[in-house]
Length: 100
Image 1 (cartoon, rainbow, N blue to C red):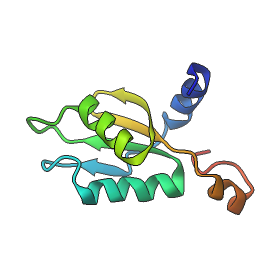
Image 2: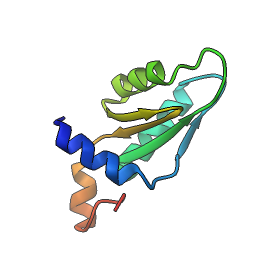
Image 3: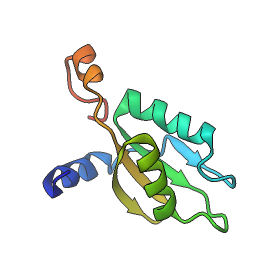
């Protein structure tokens, strides 16, 4: 993904609230499934990572990104923004993306 595209997505994600919260257990299968569902319906998703020992936001972001084939757009503090394009969503809606 190019820098300009990433910057546009960061701007779009600025006003979003986290849809998923990662707790003490980290990125479990159920958390991955929840993030996957959110990416399928929204494409652009913000995730909050709890303040527990052993939960490093950058590590979790990269592992979730690899597991779900999603781009990590931004990591700020304990908030991570993911993006995964869903062509079916655009065809079905025929309108602006869901984050707009």
